[in-house]
Length: 138
Length: 318
Image 1 (cartoon, each protein chain N blue to C red):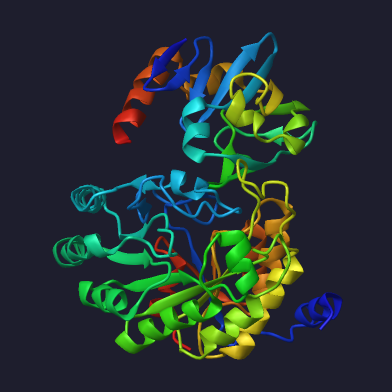
Image 2: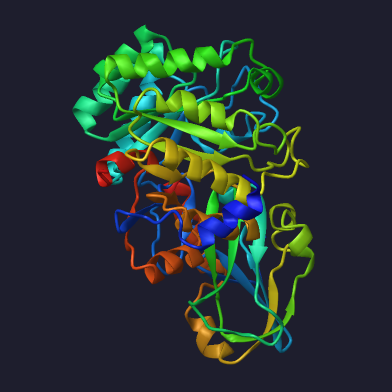
């Protein structure tokens, strides 16, 4: 893992420029919010996620997130069928702030077009470069 | 009137939007993205001229809201921040900050630079003022400020307990009179449920506001913020917020009524926003998708602005 400014960028993840990460775990993909975004958004107070069995499509909204500083759609980094939703976020949305790459994960999906989808998002090296751009933009 | 009866009236269309249009706002002090609108990161940010400092540390905020703003604690820094915003294509900014122990925001040493920002950069500038006297109101007017924003509290008990302030409702009244007398556009905010989630001084606040013909009235609502003494206090119910909106509209039918940016999130926000549309509000900041859809279904003409909702008096004329 590297740090850009004070934001963590772990290896072995893919990154979507809508501020979510995707981690391939066997035949599933875990999705969550990047550290940079949770820091920008400040205290996250509400997350609305779809249910297990629902479909998500790359670059399309699949949920909403609200914080003191944000009211925003969550945009899917890859397409797939939702296997598991992090139910704990319903009562503890702050987990996204506290542990964005760990306990604050959002959903786990079975991908439907993984190889093609991964080509459309950033690998670790590209993500580090992108984080440097974000840091420069302030 | 019991809340249940009010909601029935609202649902039956007793408070229609007679203008046939509703204005939505998404300034960049909140990141807002949905299929209808995407705020840019710098279109209209909020700037604190006290950094994270506030002498009051009110129970509902504890200075936490200041942490979400850009910091510019000196006139030079304020000008530099605004110059950068202009270069980035911003339309304007909200100048805010923490309060001094008397409930005022320390604006006086920033007046010259605010005038310079208006003259040289041409940004729309709104200012959170706190309590003001005639002299400060006049300086704001002379600086060319587009609108002065002030929270009006209608209960001495609330001012004392929540704001830790040794002032009275009459001091807010005097501030409004000062704005009115100098002729600056001013947009009072009523904070529903500030008194530990209950309605208390809101109706009195509206009565005072109505005396001075404001440019618009914005209703916001207490929302529990983590890290504050009131983080566990339940917010006012959406119906309470609707009651304030309806009262505002009835007391000031020729003044734009707006549901502002600060309000509880999640399912609560959905209920509030839907009720707000049905109360005939003229504007909503950061509306939920469902409220936009409801407005469309009521055949209201909708439009979005990336400026602060206090600017509604420039967008809708009643």
